Length: 606
Image (cartoon, rainbow, N blue to C red; front, side):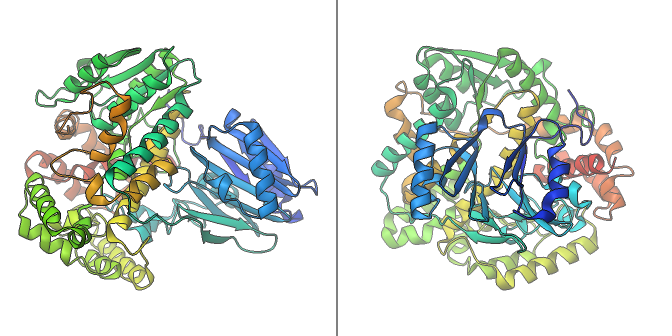
């Protein structure tokens, strides 16, 4: 089940201009296996796609050609009607606001445009290939066509954990000469002109009280789930035991009253991890479900079989350290014939506000904000004063970026990490000194012109967290495609995100009540007592146990490493840190992200 580097390619498409110069690139792409070609009125190809099956649908109305690619439960008649209305109005917004997660591509009088989703689950890239500008969902397709290699500066940015700040995150792709389109923006392609990128989405203002937000979320989330699972013979849900997955399991069972829904839980070797107990409890309360608990004793550990179990993907995958575990889950899902697998990734990021919401909440109610401040401080083991000071002194976005540039290798204070514009970017201790210097300078340059997603710090923080998890989820989905299991992330749908953002942050985030917006939304559709869990499991035990069991394999990975050869890390410092990881309180993300980058670079340069 291991793919040779470059042998497997997730579904892809490429948009081309109505230009004779695009002919060579079009013939090259059209010659690939199972490629479908859609043509301009002139007869020249304008869209070439492969691997999408029924997820690619088209509608034509007068001069407009519209293509939806991805997950969108819209009938052919409705799609045709919307295309007609878009032709009359000249606007594509209704087509772009349908429920689901998809690409929208249009061609109208010589102008092509393409947009992904607002979360960044469906990403877009553009490049100039032999003088022709082209758009694609695959950076590798464009890089192969242009003959370019891996961008070394991008690789350096990938060392930042938990991720690079937004201005850098969407400034580069893995390949030289291939540029990403930021989520919430569209790319416009005209003959003989460079690609123009314009923003089409801005987050809504947070104005809704809990009751109104819960009603809207109930409808949006129920539609998102039903659109994926209602019509497939076998549907499944990754049931971790947390509230997000429990809500998806309940909604999936509601959407499939006459069919069984498979719930899959991976057991934990840690005696103090309550996830399995809560997952069993959830499954016991639901009707029409079949609960599979995978025995942790027969399950691969994290860091096991690192080089033999990887997926060939466009970017390093955060789950690379757990690839062997993931493959085993995929085998189980494929054996059960799952036609739609729901995953709760994005639930935390969409439904909870970062603690930078506290100052604006205080303007609405000092007492409530103080009550929340005390609760959050206790939960995060910091002082109320430290948290209040961090929230009040975050400064402007540019000031925050400058501070981040000056502290790339310093430990982040818990309070500052909780209440800033984004998660503080940090480099692992094995980063080469010259890389630290270069990234610091790059961040300072980016800060000069950087603008937040919006002026509200909590909304900006929520959107950036959503987009960070969506990048990871997109790679997770692409890897699932290898096993023929369609993966879906309902919490990353536009309607779900917009509903959460429109709800007052102090209403949807409460240290004294876990995920009040979700529980209020789903409770009327779920069995009594289903959504009552108050704690949250973690996988630190699994990570440290995997490190102990597979330290030798990890150490070998970083002797003569691709990262070391590229001058990005100090291998000796890294191996010393791995040997002392259990006692050094090293952030697990430093290890897992470095491992992911190393494995990806090896595949890119076999």
